[in-house]
Length: 138
Image (cartoon, rainbow, N blue to C red; front, side, top):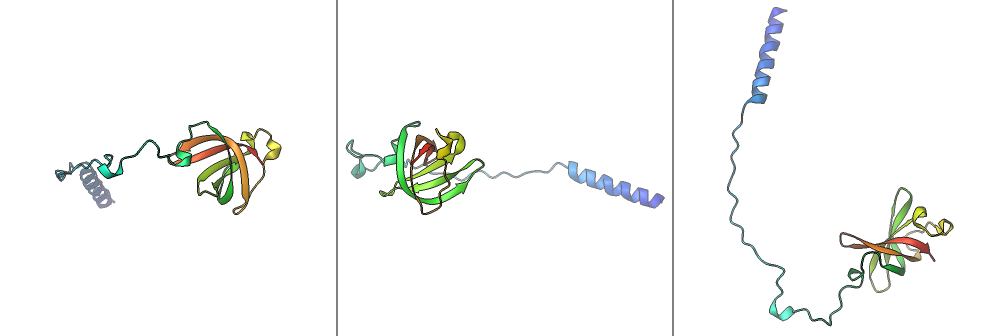
């Protein structure tokens, strides 16, 4: 029994010493990095004022829009769903459809992938995506 207590004490002491032992860390100097300005446009690709930006990138947050297109994806949420809507011109919007956001909750309807849907609501941005908080379904 005594030998067992001594052995456990030694093992514990060694474990404690190993945990508290100060370890030396070696840090390497970072390699030289060449900084390239990718925002500068080449001389032959200057943007002229007549060029129109991408359709949904010009929408200000809170803009009320009506969109009609085909549902290509649905993500189920807690109190509704988000439908990825692709319009005929290729523009993509993400419509959040939930009962609490509807002007008339009786309008709420569950759609499926492949259905054509027409929605009205206010826009907001999430990273690069234009989202629509749907208030009306047609």
